[in-house]
Amino acid sequence: MRARRSAQHRDYLSDALDLLQGWTHDGEEIRRTLHLDDSQHAALTERMKIVADALQVRPDVRRLDGRTQIRLRVPGVTDLSPGEVTLAARIEDLYRTIIAGAA
Image (cartoon, rainbow, N blue to C red; front, side):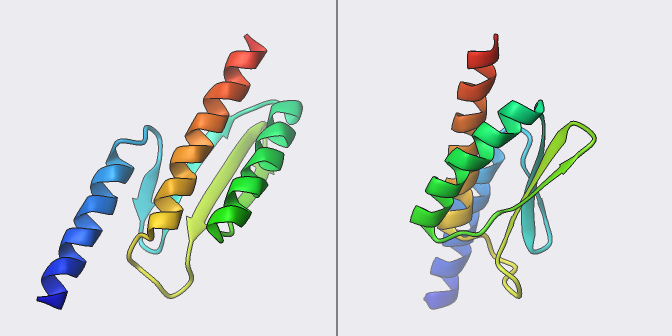
């Protein structure tokens, strides 16, 4: 019974991640690349830190050639966690808010 619930849990999180546009699941991590200018990047990372701290998820955020690269992962764990998927969804919300403010 335990393995069945684990598979259902994994399917639920994978389904949730599939609803998030632009996020990919590769091995132990989920990731997203966003095209942001420097001020938008700063705003996103500042807001993301608050959410990540609340969820106890540590995103890996890098800035490269006008792009913001975000990776969410728990080392040694291949299954998605609810915190990772929740943070990815919140990042999408923050991203939309920041982009809408620039328009």
